[in-house]
Length: 200
Image: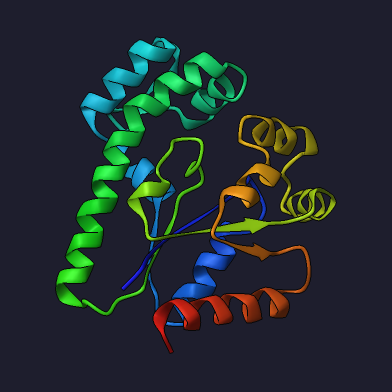
């Protein structure tokens, strides 16, 4: 059965859509969650420290960790350093995704698997999946929703600027989910895609 890469830009509702696929019975994975796991590995911490400088490392509860806020401040303002970090993290994450896809399919060959991959097209990873789905949302709606969550507009725009334009992602995707409207409309679109891909 198909492996589906779910992507989009910051704040457009990828995690919400991933949850809707999960409710329908899909197996779901988040590349962001796998990144958080990778950031705990000593070799990754050392590599990122070399790429970004020792200021990105902190000591917490007796452990050496990556200060994610410091890292974000650097990589979203310095393209070269962001790419250096991506070269360290992305191969690890893709390997983890492939291992988990294989494990799921061994247990359930008919599984529909949806993987949230924020930088799918930026990293050129679409070839690892059968289908790509982009979650889009109007900028004004995205800003309003994130503002309600306490995320300042300048932070949203800074992160969006570091990603491929959503218009380009829409052109490259196999399918698109417009998340600008009510949740029920998004849910209906997700259900249609799921049933088509699952052959149900």
